[in-house]
Length: 317
Ligand SMILES: Nc1ncnc2c1ncn2[C@@H]1O[C@H](COP(=O)(O)OP(=O)(O)OP(=O)(O)O)[C@@H](O)[C@H]1O
Ligand code: SF4
Ligand SMILES: [Mg+2]
Image (cartoon, rainbow, N blue to C red; front, side, top):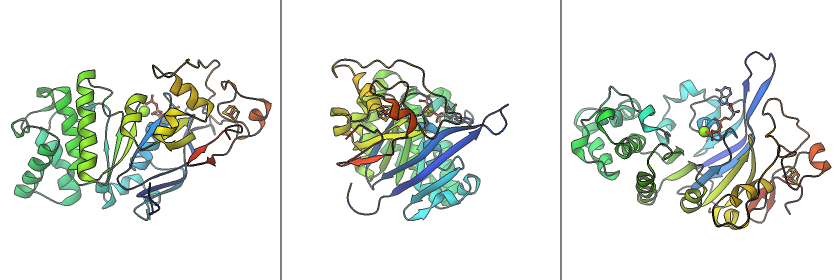
């Protein structure tokens, strides 16, 4: 990333959910996350199920209100605007999200054209011939034949629906595209095609991506930097090439060891700690960490800079 101010700067972001049936208890889904994304940069977000990836991206897409922290986009703190009001601000167009399952996220009563045109009408006021022209343009960009634009979701293949979802997000000319497992619901053969499309679009349109995926090989190939989450916390971030080649945090080491061909697999034992009111004075990975010591149960490791990376472990340096 260059020295210029990042497109998105997330500072000490928190999201705590009340726990049903347990008065006063809070689930710490996102805990003190600081992260930046540069213009044109692709950043991956990885970590096991339930670690807070979707909550974090929903906060950044302003679909969810924050508990604490700042989300500075193009110099403006968006966290100050309630999510419900954000839907009507000009920044809404600049940050768009592509959802996991195109079948779930497309309205069954909307044709592909209606779906792609909907944010145009809401956010840009474009209607009539101008909107039609913009829909045609963006359909061509994503490789969706114009003849398919009058079809409903059930008349489209998985790959075609994925293209409709991407076209919808692109229609309003965003600067940042947030992709939460964008290909997880697709057949393997279609996944590769959609990923290639996303990579081409990023280059052609100069977009920034925040890319959530369980497929570490995909993250390695498609991202410049990667952020690793564990139980709501960022535990490591840095250039993807470095993080995947030589992970520094014990959790990242275990995660990367699961990629076929990466040497011996590190199997974690022990239970994942509860995200409900976790002890502030302990490392979240303590109890499962192959390297943990007594100190890790008494002192939470801060995220520290090591070269161009940041790592939260007492012993990473
Ligand atoms: N609306 C909500 N209310 C209460 N708890 C929630 C809510 N949304 C998420 N959580 C909790 O927050 C934590 C993080 O969930 P999240 O969906 O962000 O994880 P994730 O990393 O995206 O997981 P996956 O990889 O399975 O998609 C989980 O413990 C989840 O149960
Ligand atoms: S601080 Fe301790 S428990 Fe946490 S990751 Fe490092 S060694 Fe493991
Ligand atoms: Mg998720």
